[in-house]
Image 1: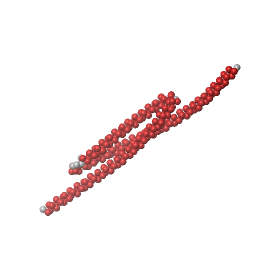
Image 2: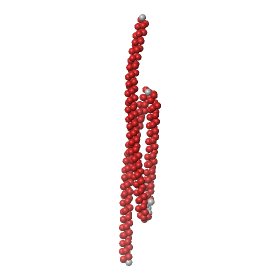
Image 3: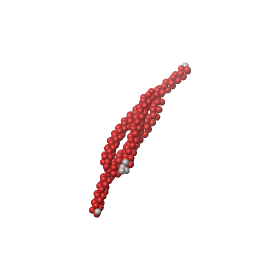
Image 4: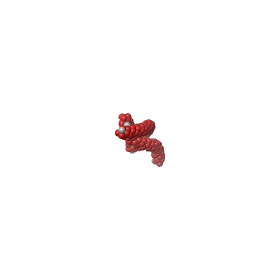
Length: 222
């Protein structure tokens, strides 16, 4: 009887050690998943920072476009023939705003998809109630988690690529706006030159009018 008890105790200790070893392995893999999820949180923070920077650049573009609208009003009063060309510029800029709105919509859709991924990961907690069954298929399910995390890495790479492309498009917008500033300066210079020429014409007309008056006075005296 004593030998039987010793044998049962030995088997129980061995079973407990085996279970503890498997639990330790599971905890280690959970730690690895947590680390990768924390890394993805940091990458989300980086994406948010870049999007906030782009919002600021949009505000700068809007401010510059508003200033150009004011200058257009001044030029319209002095040179009506330029209306058609500047209206075309406004139309192209509005089209660019629409394209950026489409980009914002697509990024919002991507946020929703990531929220869905978070919800699916949260639902995994409920699926781990049965410890015995979970230990039997844990390796397979962790492989599935690894595959999904790798897929998310690729999606982050795609986000980085799209953001880099948007940076280049902003640089192109800045270049076009700078070019338009130079064209405004040229228009201002030409208008100033015309004002000076009109001043000379006015001076010559004043002299002619004075000469005519003097001639009429002299003529009447005769």
